[in-house]
Length: 120
Image (cartoon, rainbow, N blue to C red; front, side, top):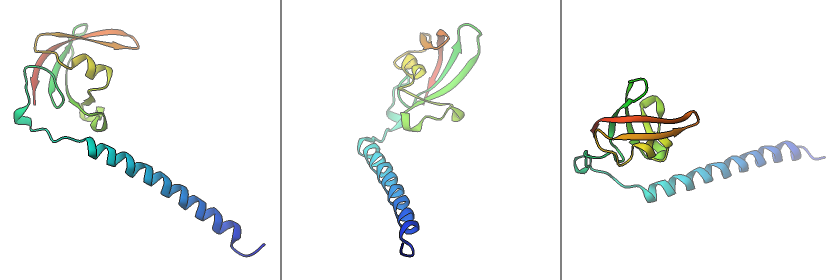
């Protein structure tokens, strides 16, 4: 066996694999950017829950109030209280007006939330 054959090939193969993964991530980000839109918050309607809405909701069962912002799936972050419009909660809230009740299907059953306030 010649010096460097196996170890150099293993490092080369690992580098090629890493390059392939990075190229996949780049392709995914390019798709996101190609479909991105800039939203002007001053043009958003606050009469109904839409993307970018900050929504104050009340759990009808335990009366707990929560505030969430509905965002695109790629921006969702529960720690920052940003939920995806594609999530069960987002789907339940989308299109609702203040005073309406949203029904959200969860693994523990349906939970009802009253829309208390909508802002941008």
